[in-house]
Amino acid sequence: MSKRKVFEFLEDLTRNNSKEWMDKNRSRYEEVKGILVETFDPILDELKQIDPRIVQPNARKSLSRINNNLMFHPDRPTYKDHMGLGFGYGKGLADFYIHLGVNEQLIAGGLWHPSNDKLKLLRQEVDYEGERLNQILNNSVFASHFVLYEEDMLKGNPKGYSSDHPHIHLLRMKSLAAFRPINRLDFYSDAFPDLVVESYQAIVPLLDFANTAIQEA
Image (cartoon, rainbow, N blue to C red; front, side, top):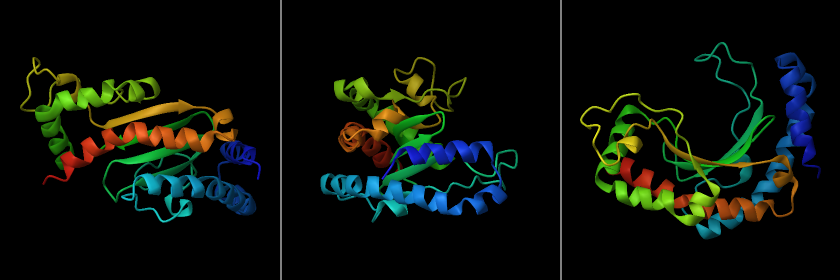
């Protein structure tokens, strides 16, 4: 199994982003999916031993579609420039994600662009339990690996919250997510499974915080 084939395929796909090219290279795409399944099935098995709440039965079921959604984003290329795998507890909940892209590789987790109703519940939880969230974010293991995603935030304050709120920075966020940058060599390494498991254990308190908030309704 050559993990390098994953990025070789993605680079070629990015340069030739069309259905015609994909149709001619469908066997390569299936080979890449097979490499990812072979890589992540044992990792998922270990994660499910640690946390039986994970619902994905195998790595193949956790693979994201490589097609872009052109109905809502017609300006995007036909295909993505990355492969993604998501491990979590069910649809609409915060989950754990591995992103292997041409230009970016990362391990991430959290609640990404939730609906307005869920975002309202999340902000209520931050309002009441902001100190607990800060403890999660400032935990030495979490903080040494993960970076909180802070690029997509309100410029002003969410309705009902004032500028002097002790957690106003967290309340302005539209997502509660964090990421750990990795690189291709990490993916190629024999130590990659340990890296993924370590990352999951570090970020699961953040997932639990978000899911507790949105499941209270």
